[in-house]
Image (tube, helix red, strand yellow):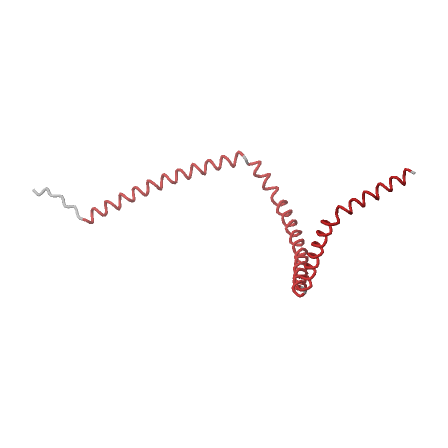
Length: 148
């Protein structure tokens, strides 16, 4: 009697494939049971909050109407404001071009103002104290005239 057991490569591959199928079906069953538990929990939550959900669903149409009205008004305001922004942009561009054209004139005015500031500083340095003395004398004279 021949007591040899012959296992071919085909038999090993079939055994592995059947094992994988059993593992896959086991995981599938575990996933489905967890999914059913989750669905059951969701159903309980929905049933417990049915009145609140219904109240929310009743409010949603009015809310969407209000959103449509607000968005319409906002779109109108934006379109009206866009013209103002375009006008300001054109005006500022015009002012910029005018300033560029008159840059030498503006430089002259700046130079003149700088010269005036220097002149004032010199005047204050040399005549500032004398001017204060003169103001004091005028005040004293006015006070004496008012006392008379």
